[in-house]
Image (tube, rainbow, N blue to C red):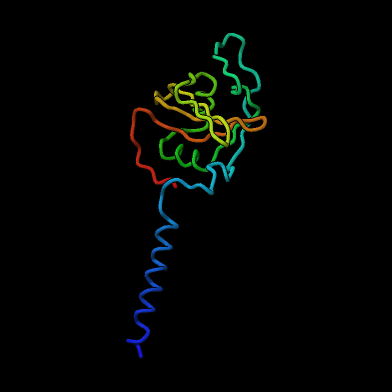
Length: 150
């Protein structure tokens, strides 16, 4: 009797294995936006000092009332040893990389690059949302960090 049902059991086991592998596979996820879970909001100063010279780009407001960290950005920050103060520092003093500005159905993203107070050369990608900015991802431009973010 076991020989009769063995092929069916193996087929079910193979299908279940295939499903679990596909479900946990990395890659582009069309159905899940990167900002699906907001983990934390922080308030940033609304006005920059008058003596600071920062470039103006239409649609990008360095004076946003709050910063929203995506789940992906929080994971990347943890892997790359970058904290929220460094994100605010780059937002305030960094340079927008105009070649890497992207626009898709979700809107524009603005990569801002610079050096943090602990001398990391980083690129932080921001996306405007309502009266704030979403931190999409955080990249260390000099060091390749081991990271297991999904």
